[in-house]
Length: 422
Ligand SMILES: *Cc1c(COP(=O)(O)O)cnc(C)c1O
Image (cartoon, rainbow, N blue to C red):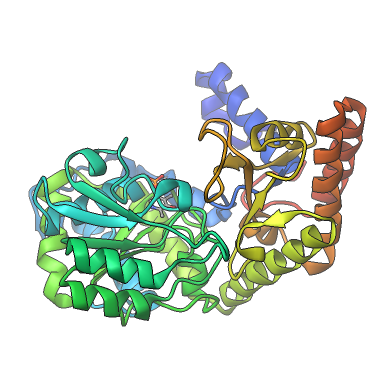
């Protein structure tokens, strides 16, 4: 399979080619529920593997430190224009290598080492780069952290305001990696105004939902939007920073020369293609289907006796709380993997267990939606999850193998974008 798909690679480096081929099979045969993953289109894959790879382009379109940028300038300008149009912003920087460096550029633009910064605590669903201790952002800055209410699992906006007014952080991040509910950008904007803070919406997870109109946009409320391009947005691995004109210079200076050297032009090309795809009516349908599938899956899991953080979902993501079950998150995640269902174990808010062995499993519907699964399949998916968790509790390996075969059958009927037909 791979020899015909990647003839040069197979001839030059058969060992590496065999790993790629095996990954193609894995991605085709398994039910991928990791909410930060997806399947990019064949067009995005092609754009990301072009000779644009060969170019050095420090600077920005029309203002480069290298010659020979005639085509690269067009590629980057196209990506920028598409980002501005899709997200309704004055300015877009498409050069950050990934979400974490994008966030570091935001700090560089608006804060000095030692300044107070505020974000959601990692165990509550925030991201490492929102000032958490083990991250550079938590050791170079003084991170103060908010969380969710124990009774509702929802962000406690009163507590956010209280903390912001007491600490007056330079930068406030909203958004996260394990938040199943809609973020109230207007509420964060009001709090940030009162506290005199720069407000950043880190929409890495939900950028595709925003682009497709399935989650409110932060564009009118925040100073900066930070996003990865490879999660629900369904582009190559990369990131973008978007802002109003007043912050454009600060953001651009922070990304280059502040933090990075040459942009990854092949990735910029893939981002441009993904943004073009995201502007089509079919992407609006995809974004709404992601949410519809997540709501249907959450309902089916609740019916089967699972506890969900916040009681359900508004977006693409579901956090299953296994505190009341016999199997902790890691054991469940590993059993699901053996059953052909790929998830990640995750802390739940107020988790009694340790981060490397937590009580939760985090799942999401972007990948299965990209393959064309619909709400009618979600009870089947919930059944598989329930049976696999049950089998994990009993150590019933044959039951996991049965599920794996059933998963494989359904996946074969829904070929994944960008992958060879097996
Ligand atoms: C994924 C994510 C990031 C980091 O992205 P990387 O590309 O993995 O560096 C940052 N913030 C949030 C909220 C994320 O979900």
